[in-house]
Image (cartoon, rainbow, N blue to C red; front, side, top):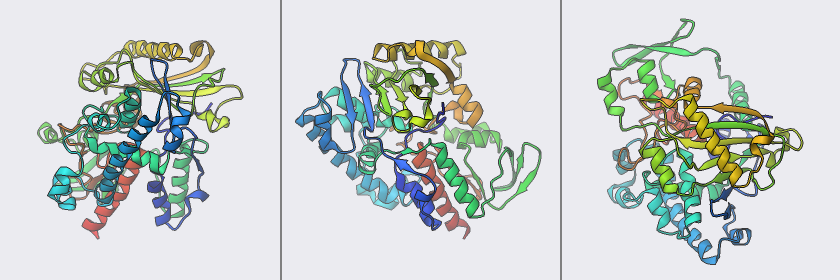
Length: 444
């Protein structure tokens, strides 16, 4: 069995293609991507199932629970989503804005206040168009890509749905690690030196300047410009040792959710599964409220389940499934949950999956690997074990993440899910491109 430890959905492919195009290379020579026929298969507690397809006109025939009016409402929603996408593309993506006032400068005050559905949440934006509850829950759950709540995140994030329907959802042949290998090969061809097993422990500073980095072996590495893909808050806490007073200004950048990750090797194939599957909570609003407001381990989680052998049989032995399971759960709290709490949640997850059709899942499982938020924090140094960087919250931060350029050190920059444009693999890749542009402007 082989499992993708990190992201398993590849969207916004042009962002990755741009990396290769800028180097004069053809991405197709480095890796192959394919588009699953079904983007998402959604299972609901009432027994209904909805398949999201890129071709919306085919969705009515593919889904007995949907009718022509449902499809018409979805098309109307996607027109609204496209307007948001086009706006975001023209400024937030292309110009790399970092704050509301930079947004006003890029778009003008009228567009900034009226164009982004500023006063609505993701849920309100979806519910304005789509009335069938199950379809509405499926469409608003695109918020999973940034690890936030549909009831708290700003409606501008509804641009993601059009992005996927328009640009497609893809699978990197052989698994997502082949993207990492492709980028490593490209870097090598460009003469970029990559030092692995050289963890940075400290950034030495002099006034408002970072003068060197120190690795785990005590080696001092001098430099003119420093870029950290460690999240902003852990980097300031652990690498530059900032004061509690300084860190207060980052309180609005609350961690996004974490996840309970299960990798299962199963001596059976569950034919009802697509490549990407969601098993929805009976009460999605309560699920969002428990995870993002109350910071509770959910009693009835919405579960993301990946079965990549639907697209690539080589990732599992013949007749078997490799299954990745990921319910969203709170980041590590001041009073952390125990290992037993996570085990109890795992059992609730497996109970739910078996009850909703995966009969005998436990009985046929002979490989199991479980990650908790503590495991995620230990491996990646993410802030409190968050998976998607900073949570998008309309009231706390208008959906903005931390700035890419340090406000304290003139030659320190950040990339990744804790800075704009945010979490998710395409966005963290785009953050690197935007940061390179900013460095060009300030250090040309």
